[in-house]
Amino acid sequence: MQNSESSNAGKAVPKRYRLSLKTRETLAAYLFLLPFILLFSVFVIRATFYAIQMSFFDWTILKPIKPFIGLANYKELINDDVWWLALRNTLYFSIITVIGTSAVALAAALAINQPKVKGKEFFRVLLYMPSLLSVGVIGLTWVWLLNTQFGIVNYLLSFLGIRPINWLGNANLVIPALSLTTIWWGFGFPMLIFLAGLQGIPEQLYEAARIDGARTGQIFWRITLPLLRPTLLFITVTGFIAHFQVFGQPFIMTRGGPGRASYTVIFYLYEAAWRAFRMGYGSAIAVALAFIIIFFTLLQFRFIGRRVEY
View 1: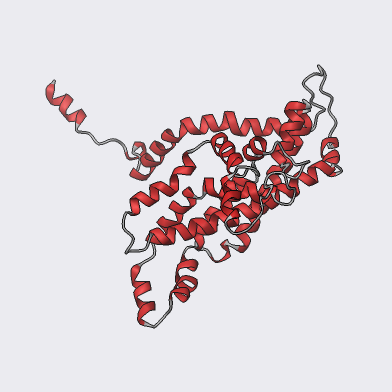
View 2: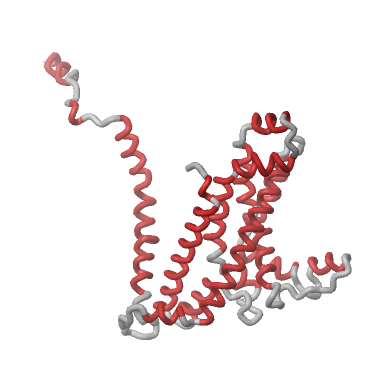
């Protein structure tokens, strides 16, 4: 009896029932991903298609009947002056903030990455700390800092003989002021990404350039920046996607003012959907914004990523 059991146990599993190591690893990976895929499908994909569907209806919360109106919301959007104003303000804010954040983050990463700098970990934590604060804290803090009467920014500028500036009350300065706030708040994470990219550049390249007599500026433009192109692409793409959806800063600091000088697309979406209760029109704004973000993302891949090896 024992001999028969041992002989059955020693039989090899038929080849057709065996799974290769790669297949088992793939199945294990998908099992780990399954919870995220389910949640992503329910809360993102389903919500996205539901928003697209709502944009074709006169979907008003206070009305029990939601009639199908086709492309009427999109036609209204094309002729809506407030939409174009909000889009222009958002694009202006995004361009300033993405360029400013990338420049400040790269400069900070280059400074920290210097071999002679002591206390790199301390400065890394110090510069990253503002990113941990909420948009509410940042907004209220900078409202005080930029205050015309007693703000510290105007106080420091007074030493240079500059009279107090109404940063948040001037239609020409409010977007740059919001961008300054956002750059100070958000450059910490791109700085860490740039720092990782800098540490991935082989030191032998710098040594060879110095032996050939290359100056610091030449090394930066010919070696550092080209090799950081994939990192720069990641930071600009993710930054543009995030900043094009700005809402918290203008909502807390200016309420879209003065006038509508800091009125953004998401601010307009909020007004249309949650104040006017026009969910259908708000969904059309969201869908249009999504396509605009996709367009500018592809544009960045075209111009920044054309020389990046994937």
